[in-house]
Image (tube, rainbow, N blue to C red; front, side):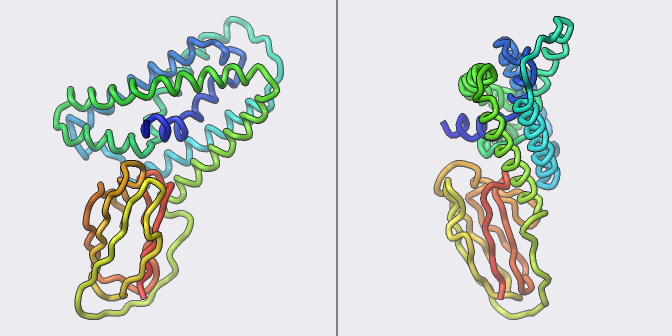
Length: 280
């Protein structure tokens, strides 16, 4: 259920590309979209199982892909809102069918929280067959939601609600772009600090819930080593945290060297939820 909800929300915007032309009404295109998604996820699972973390994208690369994906969704949404009646020739059908599986395959580049969890399972399997099976099973489990979304988009594209759907898709695209910017730390930067030092060690505890990190802001002493204990309450996006430029699967304890005065920001693996440690 969690995978269906989060991945449909974050990746479903790419289905908007199938409603950009009259051929987007063809229900077979949704099938091709799902086939492309299955192929890319299965291949990625095999690679993860074979090579492990060596093929895992770093946070900065994932952030850039989220920004590109969000911009793509916005482009498709604007096309949907501006599209009028069309009578495309039959010769346009072939390129449309190629576009559908390519868009489906591209969803692997727009990670949702549960996708990241499945990728970690595939990595830990140590087997290309097991890794491929994990990712393929995940795609099959979320396929009904994507098929339903494709049906709804096709129906809406024939009505005046197409403009409303386009507005919603623009909002989703902007949200995806914002998530990428947040994940990379390109927004909400850290103020310039001054260096201090001090003895001892300290510990802060953060709870990762389905709705974010609690408390979202904690305070620690600057110049003193700190252990950040992340405790996992619910499975979801917050189950993976990006802190100090690296991904950490929760629950975990992150040990930080003495920090200067200022703030340290961390985010979930999708850039949706963030927290701040203030050093003073």
